[in-house]
Length: 368
Image (tube, rainbow, N blue to C red):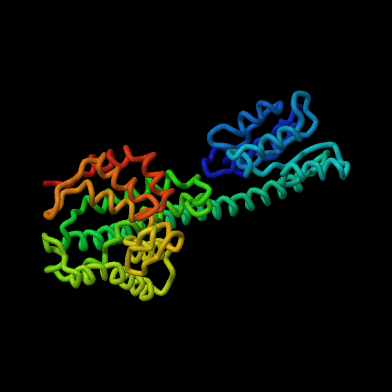
């Protein structure tokens, strides 16, 4: 047989044994088929196993003076880098208990001495074949996971862009600006983060839910697309009749999102929150809001957070019908609305993070 031990395509077998004669015997047996590395004690065997590239298979003696083969095997299996390397014990210990212990430690096989060369070669080849198949499946699985992650990220990006485009469309028809979308998004997330450890909300405000709230917030005024321009863009006070039409933006938004979800044919978590926010962000804690005159806990938490964020931004923003109020004045007005317009605990959380709101407003200010 031609000696191809130096071929880069040949698997590498590491032999760990403290007896020189055994190392010579195994090297002579394997060298025509595999690249062979040897180690005359356990610590050296571990160093070689952790080298780059690692061996494809390890033949391991049990009785060695520094650390025995059981300990070497246990340490190999404890490390992510070496745990998938098949280990075959070669030992003079032939008791069932010895074999059982070796297999329990994660060894792939157990061959007793004196060795039979055909058995050793057959077992080595069998386990290398199994490892090659396992490596292929592992690599394929990792590739598929990367592709799924990539596709998921792409879908997520398309989803986010679509949400912002829809929200921006609504804002372009209003006196508000695109920056309002971004600010209210950030306000809602900051409020939720502040409240996530509160006993009333900790079971609901998980990291996942907070991310969904952040994603849903831009759609709070999507229903304004359906409000006539003469009402939506009116610079002065609305008449009672006009205000009734303006109030319908909540139900229009809810209906639009619900119909989109229905056409999609599946439930989407962030759209469920978006429906809540669109429909109920004008409700008030004392029941004097619209469109359903909900009160207290009957108002979804998502809408309660959005209500405060929306009002704060309206107060500190310049509109054609009013000047921007200073931050301190907006804080005072929101504090006065505690227990009336707003959930008391939401207001208390706002007061803790009010300076963060100011920073968000300054960072994402409207263009003149």
